[in-house]
Image (cartoon, rainbow, N blue to C red; front, side, top):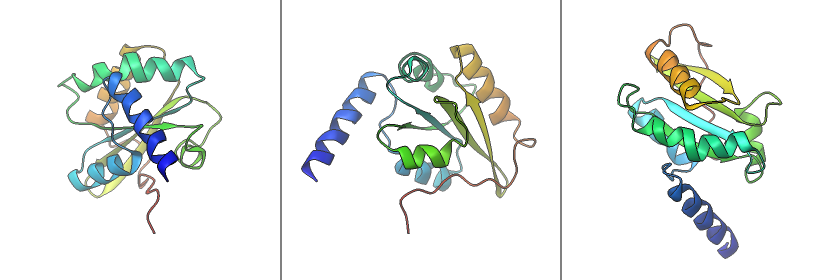
Amino acid sequence: MVALTAHLALHVAILSTSGIPTRTYEEAYKRAVDQRQPLLVLVGSESSQAYKDLRVKYLPSVKVDESIGEVVLAVVDRDQRPELAKELVQSAVETQLVLYTHDGDQWQRITLPAPKSPTEVHYFLKRNILMTDTIEPDFVPVQWGSS
């Protein structure tokens, strides 16, 4: 238990220095559902340059873009949470953004495999947060770790 706590503290410290909120997936999920906010999940591995670029360069700028509105952000490392990553990302692309939005009582899910620039991420979010009626209906965010 002490090793797990130390490992999580290290992971949180790494995320804090990158400017990304330090919520776990479970905390982000709960906040998104409770507050009916979009949930954006970065899924990848530290061995991937695309994952590092998203975590350190691209996503911090998303948090300051007021035109997008409130987005709850979670980061899932494939190496640390392989089961959750597999549940969230249903393809072989190693680094992806998974966005869950809601329209009334329905949740929608859309993915962006390995975005190449902050502009691509911003466009993806603006298009899909502001126009949610054409995205995979009836898809509920993965509720992980509860019984």
